[in-house]
Length: 309
Image 1 (cartoon, one colour):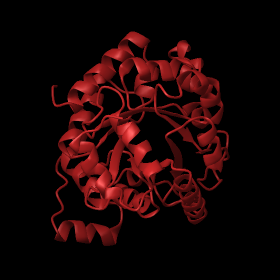
Image 2 (image 1 turned 45 degrees about the vertical axis):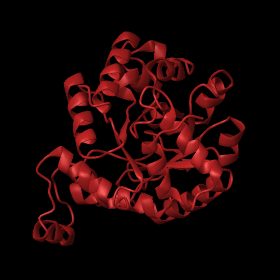
Image 3 (image 1 turned 180 degrees about the vertical axis):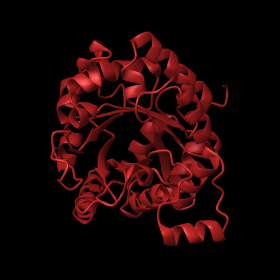
Image 4 (image 1 turned 135 degrees about the vertical axis):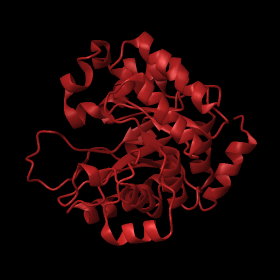
């Protein structure tokens, strides 16, 4: 497998990991058109579980087909494709070995009562990921939820098992809870805290949402203001989240969020790049567009992360 000094420098920060884990991290970092740059674009398609099929795929009916998404990722030259068990089982035979795959191991759904604690059910295992030829497992934690301590324990066990099999672990760390409003879920201090907790749980790749300049926690706000932590631009806020993940010794990628205009997607990517983030994990903003538009957007994102746009 080819490699670059940039990738090898990143892997030096994972000294406790086995050759198998490093091989899979290298595989993802060297895949696609960003291979070797230290930047990544991952296509995640777990929204059908989270939001339902019509909300996810009706804007682009081709996306109901589980083969559509890995083919799109392959054509666009992305680093990896992430999905729940059923979608990967439908596609792995064709795409394993051509495209790094990430098995998303837990999910929630929008039919749960609003009174239920924010939580996710474990719906697959690291053994499934191994069987399907995946490079990594993915899982979500909800810091701030009344169920978060149980989620942390589940995550620690899953990550340890994945590492024992030589698989990398990608953690979606989304602050959600009974006392967190919408502003709090993407607050500057809360996002950095959530990213740090994912690093502490042993994640190799950490996924968070882009933070706003809102400070949620009163005690944290005092420190941020006293220490004058830079927060004036999105790039500065990205830089602090990366700093919070062991001073940039862990790969940090940022969610594309809800569907929005292409200019906003590109502005986000430039902020991630300029702030030292490792890239984007972008789903609805891609697969809800017609294929030609999706490929055009992904081509532009690759150019941005390569410093050419």
